[in-house]
Image (tube, rainbow, N blue to C red):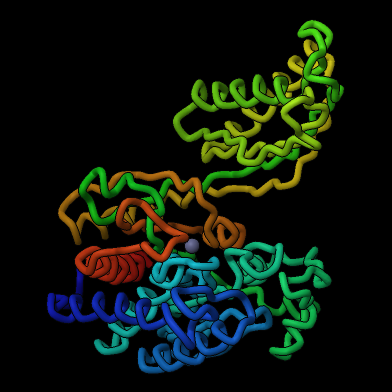
Length: 420
Ligand SMILES: [Zn+2]
C-alpha cells in the first residue's frame, strides 16, 4: 500500500492551488475577452497561458516543451530513461465566454500530482507527463481536438486553409507560432503506458448523488446529419389534402426522432437542434426545410441502430407525405470505452479518498480522452460541478471536491506504480 502517509494539509494546499490557478487563468492576459474567459487556439491568451503553465510545471520538477501543434508537455522522468509514460492531460483552450475549469482543472491536477511526487522525491517505473492540449473545443477554427489528434498520431487530414471569424487561416495562425501542419505528425507521443484525464462532469449526476467524484465508463460516439425535406411552396389557401408541406413533415420527423431516443437504451440521446424554413411566410405552405440530427451513445452499436431507425422513419415520412428527402452525414465521431483494468484501479483510488464507491458515469460530451484511447488505454475521473453547468462563466467547483480529485489522482498514480 502507500509507502508514506499523505499529509492532509499538503493535499489541501495542492487542491486549493489547482483551483486558484484556474481562477488566475480566467482573466487577462490569459483571456482574449475583456470580461470573462475566451482562450482560443494559438491566440495571445493561449501564448500567455503556456508561459504561466511552463513556470508551474518547472516548479513541480518537470522539464517543459511545446510540441508541433502547440500542446504544452511537462516531463517528470521515471526510474529508468527508457521507462514508458503515464500521460495526464486535458485541454487549455476554452469556448467564447467559457468557464475556468473545463479542461484547465485537469491540467492543474496533473501538475499538482507531479509536484507532490517531486516534493517526496518519488520516482516510478514510468515517467509522468502532463499535457495541455491547445485545441479541443474548436472555438477558433472549424476543427476539433487537433491537439489530442496530433498527440495520438491521427492528423493526416487537416485542412489548413480553414479560417477563423477574422479571416485568418489556420496556416497563418500556425506560422505566427513557427508551426505548420506538415510537422503535426512529429507531435505523436511514443511509448505511452496509459492516459488519464480529470474533468468537470458537465452534467448534474454527481451533484444529485451528493458525491464529489465519478468514474467514467465511456465517452459517446456521435453522428451528425443535415436533413433536407423538399415539399412544394404554395398559397396558405391550398386545400389540406393537396399540400406537400415540408415543415409538417419535419414536425412529424422531430417527434419520431425524439421517440426513438426515448425508447432506446439509457445512453442513447437524439436531438434535432437546428431547423430552417426556407422563404417562410405566414401565408405560405413551407416548401423547403433543413434540419440537423445529432445521435449519441456510449455502448458500441447503439448509435448505429438508432441512426438506421431514424433514416427508415425519415424515408417513410417522406414517402407518405410526398416530400423529397436528402440526408447528408456531416460528422462521425468515434467514442471510446475506458480501459477496465485502469477503471478498477481508479475506482479503488476514489474509494480510498472518499470512502464510497463512485457512480459509473457516461460522458455524452466529447473529450480528448476519446482521441487518446486510440494511442493507449485510457481512464477518466469526473469532478462534480455546480448544477452540471459548463461552457458558461457560471461554471463552478468546490474546493473540497478539487482536493478529493487531487488526492485520488495521487492515489491512482501510486497504485499504478505498485501494480507494475
Ligand atoms: Zn473540456
